[in-house]
Length: 102
Image (cartoon, rainbow, N blue to C red; front, side, top):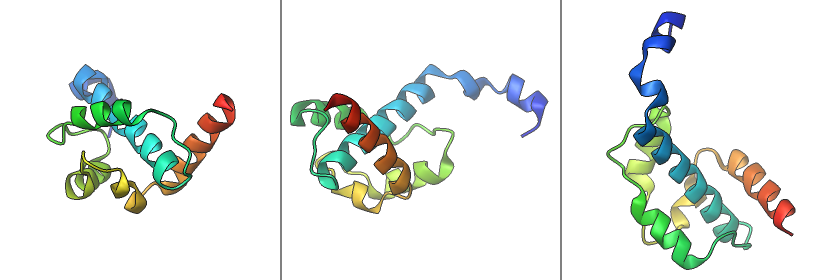
């Protein structure tokens, strides 16, 4: 991407894309904390409500993760996180959150 494209790209600050990205990250971190670390960071009800908001038709700025979510995500479970391609990042985020709420 050129500098000119960066400043003229309408999708760079798209509230729909930004919200979807935030929701996927938040849900992924919560699923990782629960399924892998066995330390929930949100209630089951909050997790379910957020999972139902995930809109797989929205493309984020990570085409690789968009594809992965479309192929692996299920709103009825958090087990999909076990095959998440950015598990190291999820571990770091979840561990930092747990450290700060303990």
